Length: 85
Image 1: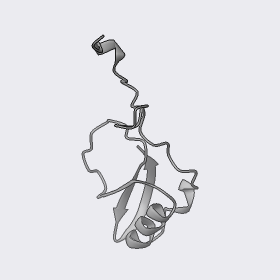
Image 2: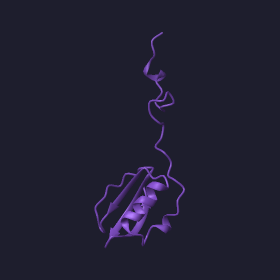
Image 3: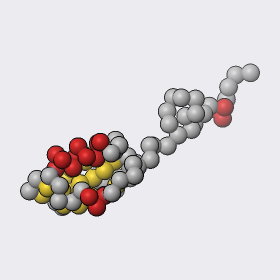
Image 4: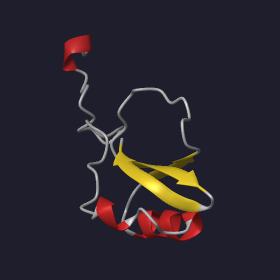
């Protein structure tokens, strides 16, 4: 019998893709403000964040949440704010 669309694995358990994005690493987000931008970015990647996005103050950003992404607001070369997604 030929497979139907309902027989396909939408969750990716067949190895083609993960069912959900990777979870966020366990990290102390309060440790980032005040760090130099390069040091904060390296720390984030070392702690397992998949994507690190550094933005200027008052940057316009989209509201979509991406697991595994860490966002920084950077002013004068230092992290001012840090948040997930």
